[in-house]
Image (tube, rainbow, N blue to C red; front, side, top):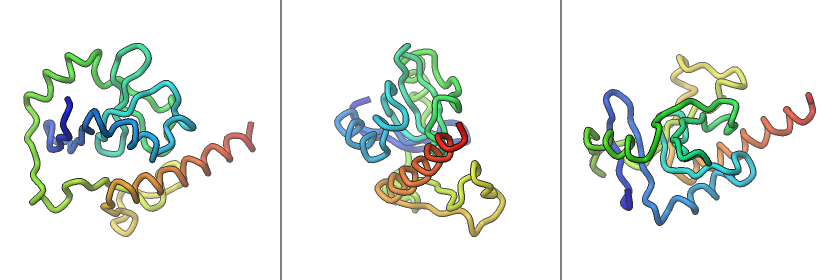
Length: 146
């Protein structure tokens, strides 16, 4: 998976980042701060697709970007590669190509997935800024409560 790819796997929209861009994109989201030890591979709906130290792929919510929310996605890279054979590729003509779904008030802070005013499609950079902000708020609250 050296090139950027995005489209639908079954009924979910996914984005797989080019190998050459993964570290830069992970840096935008603050992976070293919020999710050290995971390698960002892409975006899967409201989740980041990450490679763990154990060579398994996981879905981890963008907010909060925390290992506590980790869900198994693929047992290994080969299984992901096989699944990609069924990817229905999107093109730049698709209105949401290159965009991320963002809930303005994240679920963890009481936002509703049913409120259309709470939903925005944003570019990668803006999404990363929002995620870093909310993940910082979440981390500060966890430190205060603990």
